[in-house]
Length: 142
Length: 142
Image (cartoon, rainbow over all chains, first blue to last red):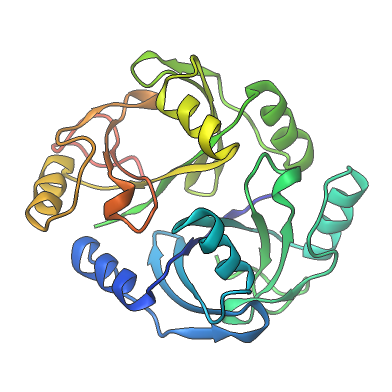
């Protein structure tokens, strides 16, 4: 079902400091910052092989990432796997008794279609399914 | 510096249950379980694109993964990035003031050479650098 790791989401308090760290210490080439109002985050991404790392700073403390930071501190927030036919995958998981946060896809960073599986149902890992823009008829951008 | 995400480490209480979940719900093809005595873990891996997910069950409660589970519960434990010349990379990070858990590489799952960067120095993410077996003179198995 999983084609690749699409991205990892890291929750950070200070997007600028975290961006500088990955740039200076690991030579990351940062992409343009993006705000996803729906999820209450400012994001900066950088590429690692076929995947990306997404640094996420909350735009307000009661957003999901803001709450995560208050409870657990900075660190790994979620793992996003690329899939084809996200609607079909979600339906299949639901039939299998997997608890979903999003029963239908919404719009994520970079205009992708994404949905979260509840971490309770995935051994504590907040798991995102992502279908690159274009939907079922187009090919993933690999 | 990072060539790809080599693997993600997930801390789980029950390796068999977690393996079954990823196999049945996500179609993961599980590799042979492996025990790494040095790190106090039993591991099962499955491939996702150019990366792997590594399910980790502690062999005893006072191992690093055992302590993680006691403190934080199941979930994302670490992210491993593939690098070339791991010794050179570690020396470079140390010069840059980055705190390392391992100042020189040790042997990880699958006979790789690996070292951890302290999460305090990497915005809360336990970050592993991995060089595939063979060392500096051989090419990564990408």
